[in-house]
Image (tube, rainbow, N blue to C red; front, side, top):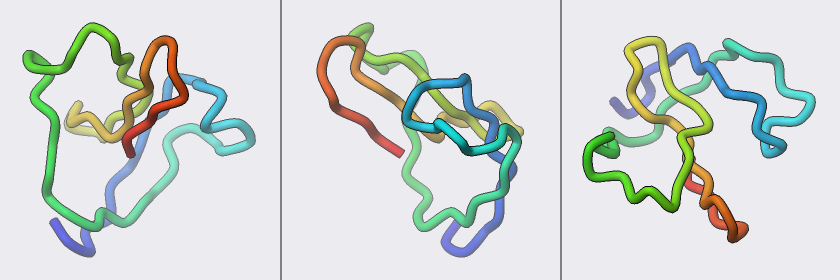
Length: 66
C-alpha cells in the first residue's frame, strides 16, 4: 500500500479539527487493525472508503493511531 492514495472519512474527532471530511491521504504502509481485535478502550475515528480503519483514539487517554 506504500504510496497509494485513499479517500479518508473521519468522524469529527477533535484531532481532525479544521480538516474537511472525505479528504485524500497517501498511505505509507499496509498495516491494518482488525475490527474484531480492537480493544474497547479505543474508538474508530477514521476509515477509508473500504471501511479499513485509518484512525483510532483511546477513550480516556491522549493516545492516537493514524
